[in-house]
Amino acid sequence: MATTRDNPYGAFNFLVSLQDANDPEETLFGGFSDASGLGVEINYSDYRNGNDKENTLRKVPNTFKQDDVTLKRGLVGSTKLFEWIKRVREGAYQPRNVAITLMDEARNPVAVFRLRNAQPKKWVGPTLAAKGGGEVAMEELHLVHEGIVYE
Image 1: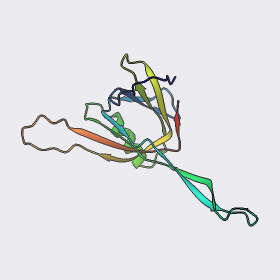
Image 2 (image 1 turned 180 degrees about the vertical axis):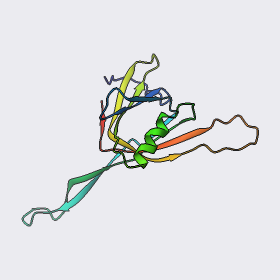
Image 3 (image 1 turned 90 degrees about the vertical axis):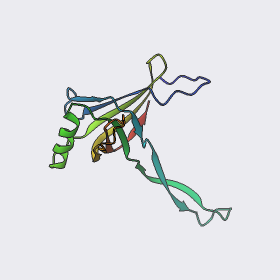
Image 4 (image 1 turned 120 degrees about the horizontal axis):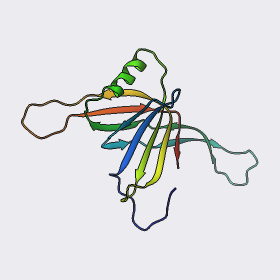
């Protein structure tokens, strides 16, 4: 799907879907304005054989961890996202496979970041202030996941 080009893609054109890992028919789509935290950190161990010719350590990769992903959107009338958070908060195991699809200028998909078994970690509601501005009521969802794949 990835295509080589001279100009980088804009970060403003993407889609987010949250598919129930146990029930593919149950999918939440969100008009999110921000998706951040797509990252992996690899840990390394120092290692040296006793008979190595050079007196230096080698770096051997071992475990790695996934960064939490944060999604932000304007608060909308649908309560499906909060219902999912409530069920997980009450002890249900309801992982979702999340796809964050980057689009080009013609709205064609050019890259997909897939999060395996994502679950809500934190929800932040909107900041409400009656100061007469035109701000949008935003909600924020932090997700933990068990792996990221870039396609």
